[in-house]
Picture: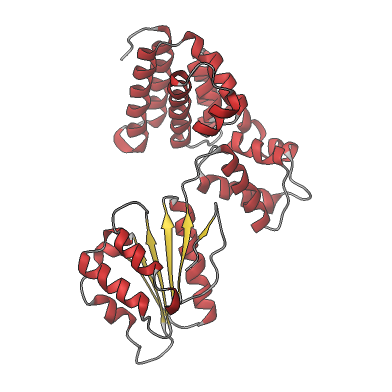
Length: 336
């Protein structure tokens, strides 16, 4: 069984068993949704069962895939197959080798060592009609640009590289947010989508992203960082995305600072997954940082991350406190 590996490959071909492997939750979820929709279109009227593998007990797979008295077949989506018990995993592997007629089985697996026997077993069932689609973690700048270009093609639109870069600046790196932005731009604009179109559509938002907040904070410009933070929140930028940008900015300080001084920007960019111009900017930012300060800043954004995801009543306050602590860490102060 040949595995298809890409940032966002299509997932509409209906086969008896599909294993979707990857850490990119948005892409995996969309693949399942597309496969279920395609299966229902090919065989209308069938049942759809969607459940977590941890909820599946021994013997239940047989019941779910047994022929219905009323016919019509069924679609069975089993998520997080790595969490299946040993008995259920063995049943799934056995089923993949001999799938039931009129049943479409879609499995998801997060990747990694847990449940690898199940992955190997399903991969070995090519003759029975099984296939695997992989969604590797999207970590590099170029991969995100490729994702955006592909999203616009899915929507039947064309966008140049300037538009893709501007959209990353305006929205951030979260794939779900990027996909939604591409859909919205495709629906609300005409002609070729370029940097000007993106900037006009988002109005002031591109100037007030989490990455701008992060840059001002690590450069020690407290008043500017706070101003950009408040504007970003006011224009609808997600607190989670802002916190992610702060974390990425501080982590880049650590990774670039730990690299050999003679390393070229291009080589280091390929290693850390950031464009060369960003490496050059981080090197300038590093001139006023000490390793101990970077460690304190990392601790600050880790606390803020937990707070904006539910531990604090005010995400805005948590982010403002994190910005102040980052600036203080750069100056060598101990601000708690």
